[in-house]
Length: 250
Ligand SMILES: C[S@@+](CC[C@H](N)C(=O)[O-])C[C@H]1O[C@@H](n2cnc3c(N)ncnc32)[C@H](O)[C@@H]1O
Image (cartoon, rainbow, N blue to C red; front, side, top):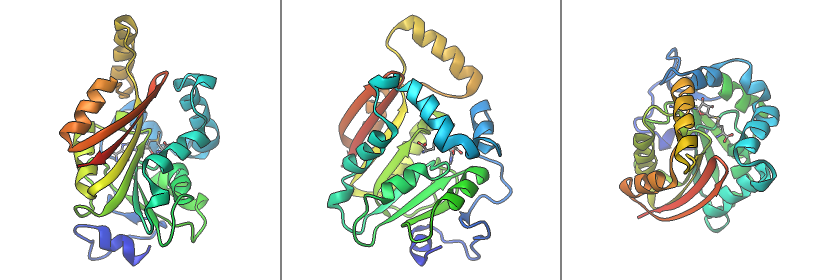
């Protein structure tokens, strides 16, 4: 764990727990929120198949199959919308990093002495992230609650939150937290669910949300929430049941 990550924290722990290859700020706490989807994220099995099987299939179908962007295109969009190429030595936060797939993809866009900090609440996901991230990749991991980020105000140049806002107990508090840890003018990119416009489909999705704990957001709802959190210049793209939003902190 680099000193650089410890310096981003507020407050920094007096005795950091680094025993698993990531900084663990949750310890024995299982996780912030107990739903079917969250239990799956904390399981031992999902992290093993997440990056190469689960994500391509589940996200692929949700993005409308061949009509949506590939995983590589998703990652390229994040690097571009976050402006990584134009931000030397960027400090980037990857919220709900899972097994580190997005963190590593963001790190390929860093220039100079850049750093990606991937945070997640799941110990099994982070175990996989550490195992799959070669040393010197420019990525470090922290186990914490994404809805209560432990970083100091304005610590990051850019924040990415892919595939997770819909899992959080309070997604709007999470967005407010992301705004807090971004520097003024810093950029945010979000990939989350999109509630279909047709009322009958939307109703069915509501029932599914209640069952699984996965929420669906209308594009207008997300744009409004970004505005409330202090973001401007919202860019967006929608594919099937997913939407991307990019924004700049005012
Ligand atoms: C579907 S994975 C997304 C991984 C990656 N960002 C991607 O796009 O492939 C969702 C992740 O969100 C994490 N997560 C859910 N709620 C969280 C919370 N409150 N704090 C931190 N991580 C959380 C889960 O543990 C899981 O690893």
